[in-house]
Length: 561
Image (tube, rainbow, N blue to C red; front, side, top):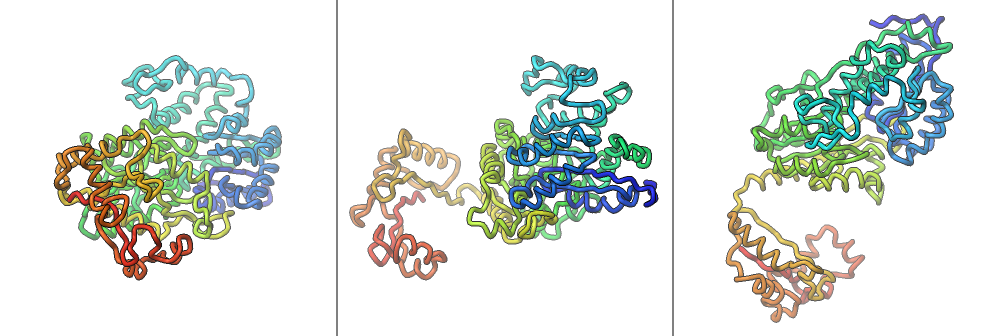
């Protein structure tokens, strides 16, 4: 139990925390009343960098707090425009505050760190040189992971030198190593302890983090506060674990400890979560996905790994003896499977997916705008979101990207807890269900559509992609599919014959540039097409003039079964 300071003896102290997104806002709001009872002079403010592009008020509020901050903590600041928005303010305040701690950010931000005698802009101290020796020289490489190895042997690092798991283990060891080294090593130790608190920022650890920074960094008129708070050590949570909204405790480490479903199980879905949202108690968006899947009889296995490397979670919970134990995987982090918003290792991620060998879908929750702003925007995702949430994950091999949640409200500043968007979550759950059903269907009963290049359309350009042997590839693909048990029907004798069937067939009868496989009634099209007005506004009244005789539309294709 922390001891309260009387209001009459309250010493003002301004602690400013800056992060990328709003995941810790709720934890900070819950911790603030208890901390202010202990320290009546405490002003604790939190700012999310994702707010600044949409709200000048949010940015100005952050700058004002930096200008008066006594202890300033900056984490996950790596986007260039976000850095430049506050970098001059941080530089101006650096020498005038008790401490500025920057971690897990771009290099120019991390170098702002000044904590006691630990100054990242000064000449390296003996403690820093010791850490470099512990990590190993840049020339010392592990042939397996191709990264600087922080240990003496493969056995010691278990071949995980290139993974977040090993880096987190090293982070936990460093404070113990530095504990008994005098001088500036204690300030270096404090820096790594701050990182430990931050990376496991539950409500408990968040409150302890604030106490620890005051206990360690308060100086000048605030020095007396050091002895008036006592920070508990960081609570250690599983690096790799499972989450479920119906769990009595927040996380477990065994699938058997997950609650049972109320309906029969039709399949299993591995969900990749971010540990930070789970520990911060801001997992409403995950809850919505889990509930929607389980309502359809798909048992969710919601797993997380510390850091931004999902491989340990996938290997532990989605595989057994090298084979998949799930029917599909959905990455709900919005980031690359190996890496985060600042980097990705698509080679490692692709290798992992090859070993898992199940469909992997990508879902992203909005943090750079609210759900209301996204719905009301003609643009949808912003360019930065499209890059880190869609383009980069696709390099891993994930498919079907979709928005499934975010924060409510039209205003960014302040935000709300994360929630699932009911419509989007149902779309995702239905898509996953269909993929699982397809995966469980016998090959002979699956219906396969092949789409060929055809541009410009209706100009005899079908299958004419430059420098690609389209019909040879199609023929070989169909031949292999037939050998593997798909119902293909009678194949032409070779690629040339296949080309003739597709491009000629009955084309003379209809006066088309390719074989007509089916006709569609214009009346049915006009009656049933939900976007008819939009189509006609662009292309004119139905039926138009292409691939139609006025009564029917012609579908140019070739049925192989």
